Length: 100
Image: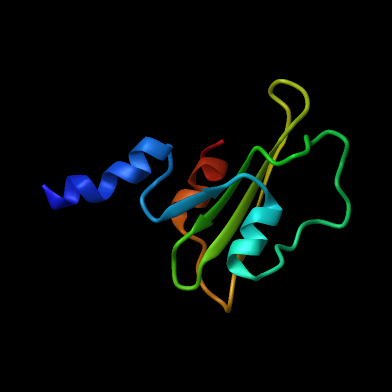
């Protein structure tokens, strides 16, 4: 019963267990105290603001920012960054990109 209760907040928020969603890159930076590094060049084909900003509660934590193309079926870009040291990017953050 406790396991089910532990999973409920993640399911209600539509996020995997161990993830936290933010409204903006600035909100994530404020919460973590770490600047998220984004590309210096941002093509017009990708929409702003980001479609999804998440923090994977791993060791070290991982910031993930997803951009969606302006045209239907257009390109997508996900930028992921470990915060506070080297580490692996969780598989669930990149699994969709690999299967496309």
